[in-house]
Image (cartoon, rainbow, N blue to C red; front, top):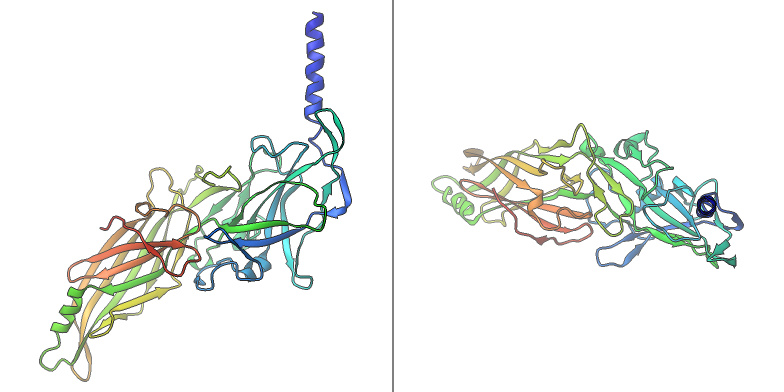
Length: 398
């Protein structure tokens, strides 16, 4: 009985000791926590915040996060204080900062927030050694800042893990119902186990794109056989001929909602969640007719700024895909008026998972459409977000 009693006392003391760091840290009022931001690039080097946060050639559809947008809307920060022990994702919570809104002050050209937080003063014990020991804080961030309720960011980022939840902080993201108001999403590489700096060093977030994009650039070309057919129409009083698109639309079936874990130990950050609306559809169309090819020219037409964001993750049982519907004709010119001679209609389906890297964050799927006499070729080229020239990847064509 005495042994059991002593054992219980020892266990109680151990529990008290283990919980001693689970409190607001003693702060050093002379050392405030300060932040800065930069943007990750595909080659591993960071682009400092004095340059655009995305490549200037990136289209302006929706709300793509540029440097100006980041400075205008700010970012959210979660801070996990772990005391004398380094970050363990199963036993932490954002008790130091919780969705702290960090905004840009143009006057001082610095990132600010209020009220200010101060670094832990470093006092404590490790393995029985008294003295000034390092106290750790881990920071995680996302952008644009969301308060869960207002504006497009509030709609697209509607919820977060709770402040008292143990484990890596996460946010929920959902695609906007309006393609023109879709919100880009960034997240930063975690700043693990940060300690009070010896000078004015800042905690620097290296942001990257969490979503991917499809259809930002659509190229329509004519096959050589189609060009030959156009040339064959120039007979009699016909002086010219061309291929004209009379209707064009792409219907996307996409994952509507998912969870982004702000750090997942270098594993996939996106996770599926139970949802009453696991998929959604978005349609991009062009109502006005346009010419793809006129006899003798290069035979190519590019559509920009019509892309949609997608979550690079499939819900079980649902396939993310793009379904193309197109009508086109050969139109001839008799010297005074154009006449539409031949009508063609076609459909084609492209499934996103047929393309390597399509389900990695920060990728573009550019669409390549080829018009033939009897059918349509529908392929994709994949590229990093900030690349100018995509690398074509073979995929299934229907």
